[in-house]
Amino acid sequence: MNTELSLDKQEQKEILPFAPQNLWLLFFQPKKFFSLAAVYHHRSIMIAAYLIGVFAVMDRVDQNLLKAEVGNRTSMMLDVTDTWWSYWLLVLGMGAITAVFAWLIHGWWYKKRLQFSGVKDADPQLARHVWALQGLVATLPVIIVTMLQTLMYSNYLDAYQNSSILNFVALPFMFWSCWVSYRAATSVFKTNAWAKLWFLGLPIVFYILAMGIFAALMVNA
Image 1 (spheres, helix red, strand yellow):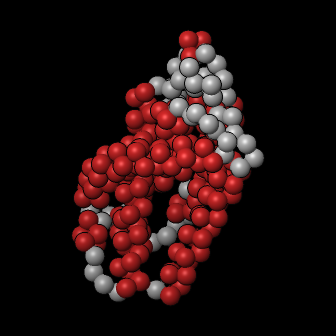
Image 2: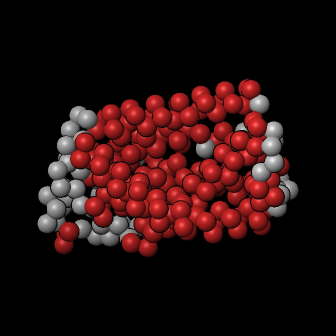
């Protein structure tokens, strides 16, 4: 029996993360959500991991478009983003492959951060489940915004080049996801004070630096 779990698994009921009330708790009351029984619906976890993979491919597409824009050179992504069907085919298809690597690598790194935060014997599967769930906070808003853009623009390249308020809707959730990640780690596992650094401080610094680099590239483009 894993000593990090707050309740005996036999007394826990399975949590459905995508149930509306649970999704609300995950986004806006993470401490309460992760204080619930730590047994999550397996298929929901797989869906969460897949969505994270899709999000990662979306981010890669944006990075390639930015490189092409800054370097004044052509990119294969220009063809991919010329129609919505080709864009969604890419992100949904490659998202499945990316999700596998994210599950293995990011799940492993999440467990390592738990160890750096004083958790001695964290359940690897539980660590990956918590990682996938907290990742939804940054992932879902971006996917929803892109779905709305599909209805508003002729193709993804058009949506990318014509910034609107929608482009900034998902931004706060990226920073909020750091707080959710911290709440998740400290609610499910017995962490020490180092958790504030590994799950809150460093991720926020990373996002700030990434945004600074992005802004600098856009100014010089």
